[in-house]
Length: 528
Ligand code: MSP
Image (cartoon, rainbow, N blue to C red; front, top):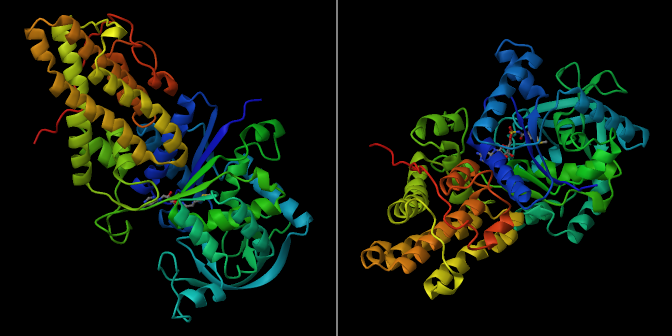
């Protein structure tokens, strides 16, 4: 049985259309999934939509629709964006699907039967935009105004809640979680987020997590199977999706193939849910420590001019507009966008999103460096070698050729260190350094002079070394820009798909005299 590399993204709330923040997580997860596939691994890449809860019910109400009809409409915007951005997920889970409802209800029943749930009266605060509970004790530590508190995470007003419900013990598992984290220092990444969770655990956790909402107030949720007055709290419901999609409780063989998750990518806003509640839920369900997800990676936020993106500020950026309007002259607009997101900031840190930022990055890295290298190389082979990639003998390679070969063929190994750590920007930097080196090599070797001087053997060596660099670069860039690299592959005269990553450690692999045809410009400069 082949063990899968299981990669997840959060399930996005379908109360409104997707924005660049949502696309960021999915592009990152996609690059990772494509990297592992190109390593020959079996990948199971999951994304989806979070469709229950008060926030969705309110949005449906405002749109004058029934919640199910409303989410059915909004989810299409997410699905079409993932198509546009070339997201290669293997499954798209919706929390309203029957397969998920069944697992949530079975999990609730199991926890209740094993005495892990209690029915209690609750007195606290609720943040509807974040769908998050806050106990008076937690708030007291974080807010001055205890009468009219705001949410410590998003600063929006909280709603007082006094009601009965079903509770999962949190504090009971606190010691277990602390020990688990101590034994698994890589469990939350980057390190700053691990430290954040660890310091949260220095204080007592709230005694319980309320995992239900009274139907009288919130109708739109998964019914609690043993208590008809309640629906399931939307976070308890949504987190379980990561299990549902593996066949948990339904198909043991599938479950063993897929579970545990190797990498769960989230934004830093939902760290508490994934690094406190989620492991405690899994522990309560009897998932052993060595079957916990391997890593929760919380990335940073894209801001707009240092401000948070929000509806009230009216500064929400739609990725569809960036790709289809702002980058409309680009034949590979989605790849340009993907490249920008992955290269611009180190994954884990915050970044500033702007069209000027995309323009600058596009001009320097893609048009001037990569596009130019492809175009110059193939145009020179057109001119001097009749569009056939020249043969060379290894014995004639000079130190300069070998230096280029050495740089290009060593990047695959660097990717094997950087990609599992989600250091996307550094990985791209390493690849693009080779591209810059190849452009400098052209200036130094001056193939046009070699041609004039009739030094054909040396000319062929240089042009072949450049073509080999393009071959290697195309393989290495594939997880990030799958359409551009497929086109470079075609322009080099290859048929079929770009091969596995370890091929990028090889040199002189283009068949001698391979011919190619057209090579249109990959990254045309915008008309001003
Ligand atoms: N539905 C919950 C997640 C449940 S997972 C079991 C949720 N959904 S959300 O629609 O609000 O999406 C939150 C996620 O979107 C963040 O964790 C992050 O991945 C992404 N982003 C939202 N805004 C963002 C930025 N401004 N910048 C980067 N990513 C952000 O929370």
